[in-house]
Structure formats: C-alpha cells, structure tokens
Length: 605
Image (cartoon, rainbow, N blue to C red; front, side, top):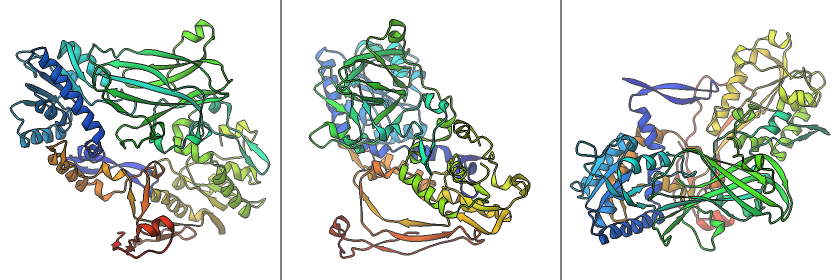
C-alpha cells in the first residue's frame, strides 16, 4: 500500500504530499528523532544510573521486592540499569512500535529478557492486575518523558495515570523531582523575533499596524540553545526565580495551575522576555542533579545536549520596569505547556490574582511569519541593502511586481515612488490603495496589471514553505512563469544567486546522528541499526536545516561556489549539476586564515 509523506516542491513554492511506501511516516519519525543525542548524553545517563541505584537500594532496605515501571523506555536502557542495580522485575512501556521492537532486541541481546517485559502501549492504556499488562503494581517509577518545556511530551497525564493505576503508594521515583526556573530580561535581540519594529525608508517611518503591536503572539515555546546567546545580548531585570517543582514520587495532577514568584527589579528597563529552564533531582536529597541551565551560568564546562534545551517566552506586551520596583512573575501551565505573565506586585486583586491568559495570535502576522522571519524583517542592515538595491532601479513610471511571501519590498517600493502595492501595514501608514493584493504567479495576467508590463520584478526571495536555502529558487520558477508580463528591458531583483558549500567539523551536533554502540556498558547497537535503516530509507538523501549559530563548528575546507543561477534568464530545461572536490585544510589554516597543507578531499555531489 502506498502512503503520502510531506515534501517541499521549490518549483511550485509549496508543500505537497509525495507518494512513498507505507513505511514512510515511521521511517521519517525515527530518522528525525535524534535518539543518538540522548544516548550520547553521558551526564544524563550517569545521573539516571546513580538515581536508579539509590532508589532500588532504598526499596531493598525496606525489605520489599523491587518492581519497576519504566515509562517511555526507548532503548530499554533505564530498565537494564534497574535490573543491574538489583530490581526484581521491570515493566518497560514504549508506545512507538519500531522503538519497542528495538528495545526487545536490545534487552534480549544484553541477557535481561527474563526480568524485563516490553509493553508496546501508551502508558495511559496500560493496566495492572492478574489479567493486566502488569501482573503487579510497581514501587519504583522511572521515566524520561521530558522535553525542553518539561511537560510537552505529556509527562503530567502519564504520571497522573500511573499513580492512580500502576504504582504502589508510597513509591520511589527517578527522577524524584523537577524544578522550573525563570528570569525576566530585556533583550532587543530576542524581542525582535516577536514584534515588528518601525522601519525608516527614505526619511519616512514605516510602522507596524496597532493590531500587531497589541498581539500576544503564538502560544508555542521558542526552544533554543541558550548557551549560544551571549549574556551581552540581554539585561536581567530580576533574579533567577524558582517558579515551581513537581514531586514525581507523589500523585501528580495535570489540571491547570498557576505559580507566582515575587521579586524586586535589579535595574530599570523594558520587560520583554522570560528565559526558562529546569533541572531534575534524581534523588530525594537533591544530591544528584541533572541541570538544563545554559553554560554561561556555570564556571565549568557543561554537558551539551540537544534533546533538552532552554526556552524563551515572549511576554504578551513589553512594559517599563523601574529599579527596585516590586514585580510578580506568574507561570501558568496546562497539561502540556507553559506561558508567563508579569504584574506589578501591588496591582489590585482582580489583576494580581488573575492568571495570565494563554497567548493567541489575533493579528495573523505571527501565523504567517516565523520567529526567525520576524528577525529578518527587523534586521536594519538587511533592510538597508534592499532599499539601496531598489533605489538603484526604481523610476517614477516603474511598474513593480513583488514575488515573495509576506514581504515588505512592495511597500518599500511604493514609499520610494512606485505606483501600486496591500493590506494592514499600508493602512497603518496611510498608504491604502498603493499596493495590489497578491495572487499566485501562474494566475496573474496582464489584465491583473491593468494592461501594463512589469518593469521591476522583485523578491527577497522568501517563501513560507522554504526549509532549505535552495528552496528559495522558487523565485526563479515564478520569474519564468511571469516572463510574458515583463518588459524586454525589465529589471529582475535579485539578478542572480550562488550556492556555496564548506565542509565543517561540528563541536557537538554530530552526536544527533552518530552511532552509540554501547551506553553505560549496555549494547544498544540494535537502536543504531534501526536509525540507520530509516536514514537510508529516505532522510540520508535530504539535507537537514539547522540554525548554525546555535551549533559551533569549524571549517575543514575552504568555502567554494558550486552553482550559479542567473535570474535574468529563464529556468533551463535541463537539470543543473555540479561535481568536484574540496581539499581538507589544516586546523591552523582554518583557525588563523593562513594556508595549510591539504589533508584529503571532500566531494560535494
């Protein structure tokens, strides 16, 4: 049976469902899951092992049989740790069938089949009892159900169900406790990812419509490698606040809750952003801690991990804060997510006691533009480059056509003298009627341009469906589709593009794809093989988009241009290809810029 998987089609500037085998979906999920990153997280693995040994020892000290429930077992690693530590039996629950099958192979290969039962179900569907999936309730619960936001993978409902149906009371839990921390900061850099700043064009000020400024934005968390954000990029307005803790050894509720931390502002500024992370206490005494804090909070080097990062939350609106002002920072959670609100500590009761509402985009801009896109639009140097290019080609009688998604270029062109260009941004700046509403390139005819031919075809280019740099070649395909509407001497902006490549050595990112082999003394090669099969199925033929500023690397070759695209010409009928090799260079050459001796070659295909 055939299945349909998502695929990007640059020539159409859209995503479409591509016919694949019925195994496509789960191969794609496995390939993109980054299981290897978790297995390479030695700090996590070591501290889980310490916590498990201690929990098993506490139960044995009470003279009880040790029965473990491992929710979200993955490779079965934590269950094998528990049995090695002395557990009598483990029930390991894994909802994803391919992973559950890999766990069975791993458990068998390591000789634990008689003491570990793999249950291929969601934990909330597991039953305990004589006829249940578990023949007895557990007195130790082990989980790794956490994401960057702590609760985004359903940890709370899973714990809630387990305590009601699958666990003895009292019980031991590894981790024992999770604690969420937050800090209020002012950061023009991070805030530029959430709100559109005014732009100066030819002495005129282009402002965002009021609806955008009032909008709280989208609800989804912004998870990033906060260690790569320089502390010089933000100003802490208050101390690091302990927002709330969850004790996993006791019954857990997934019902919505609010938690407030009151503090005195350290300095004045604009309250814009909340930085947040969490840590895990693997034991009741808090002597074994696995922390997600960014590296700049510690004097010594910290373990790198990509499966758990840090979170950035944008406040619904920025507000002024005075030094020594008393403030209340409130976090609200449901069963899967968190959001924050800020109040003056002396606000009247109706305001002070009301939990912050869940953010919801009401202006549409946050639904159309991603956070990196907001950052692009707020980049003054980038804007100045586009304005300079437009200035060099625009004339009073220019008929301009913009080919990009959600671009401000047509607005800039109108401000600089072009005749026509749409929507809310124009109304906020008294330019109604100056910009035509867009249509798809293939649907546009000369009638849509009032019989006029286009003298300037422009694009950033930016398309909302683009994931990889070359997806922006959609612009070239649309330019080709519009060829009949262009004047013979029409200007195409940009005129050309080039694809450059460089081979790099990542400091850490390589771990998300690297085989693990053994982990804490256990053979997990069956997981490596499963991931590799899925990569070979489809993913290894595709490049992966990553924000490289978050992942330090060093170049091991010089950069090279491998393709050029002339947008003044139509898309050629034949495919464009390039093949060659890049010599590796020495570490001294890549770090200092001096010429080094080649050490082999890298071949782009």
